[in-house]
Amino acid sequence: MKLVVGLGNPGKKYSKTKHNIGFISIDRYSKTHSLKLKKERKFNGKSLKVGDLILLQPHTFMNNSGISIKAVIDYYDIEIKDVLVIYDDLDLPLGKTRLREKGSAGGHNGIKSIISHLKTEEFKRVRVGIDKNPLVETKNYVLSSFSKKEIEIIDPIYSKITDIIEDFSNDMEFKHIMTKYN
Image 1: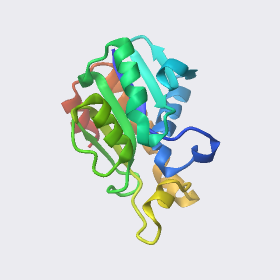
Image 2: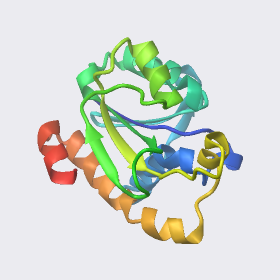
Image 3: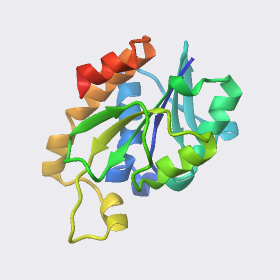
């Protein structure tokens, strides 16, 4: 069983923000495969199980993402090695992706929550660069929408992430996935 999590914040207010790259990635993957996630109270999020793949968008808000992820892992008895988390990264240029097998939170509150609830840093990640703007406070920046120019840069990344999810769900060794997409 594989779990792919897209991080973000629930609600229309946040739907097109930089901090919702994970949610948008799951939505694009779902649309590509004509799938529809459903709200699951027991997981505090939207999810869908398709064969041995579970897609999740935690609705605990970014800073408490670990609560929802832990609930899914416990319910389906998923091993940490089979968890992939997709999220925004201020330290990468806009549209750049970086795959890792483990690592620290790097200041990302959603990742801090996951590490705290899973009690490990050893889960797979797809970090998607949103860049940063030194003239805008970080909180305001990540909660801002993409400009038209930024959308042109970021939009092709969702196809790449769909391919990453495909390879991950088809049991491709993650080292090979990293080599293929990094």
